[in-house]
Length: 251
Image (cartoon, rainbow, N blue to C red):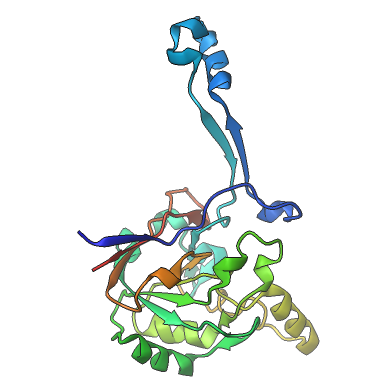
């Protein structure tokens, strides 16, 4: 049996100060709450084991909260002249494939991961890239996951590097930072200073029909190669992304 490594962030209430559009909420209902709900069926608590009913939870969870998979629809309404696919329209065989970890740890916040760095990183991993492989970029920014400024940490992948991977048959790419691009505050400042399009959110809007896995966890527990990734997104109709329980099966 392969060793299974969990690459998914925990889904828990967001820290205080998290902007509403980024926040996750979890409301927990106790066994006593469940017993009170069961009384609605006419069954008193004395007829339940230990007087307890069911527990349940209500989650306020954005499609881009926690570990999730992006669909092309997230980036633009059209990709390469055609309507972009939503998350429920993507082929499932994209999301179960051999994986490789590219180690870019030690980089400064805002550093750009360029196309000419990918081939040496693959060689260092001892991996020969094949069509439909899943490429995971390790930054170790998952250590900031519970911090309010999580989104402002980490390097980012350039549009050119994203094209380089796509041209070699990669359709799913992931990162253990808040986003695939450089931190948005840095891209925003540069875009405004230069007054140019194609800087802010450049890798997302690279006009490519591909998927990103963002906010991965625990990539340090994986070998560079020799594992299979399963990252099936929830089937949310018409959505730009969906949470996923991402795991790696190590040979």
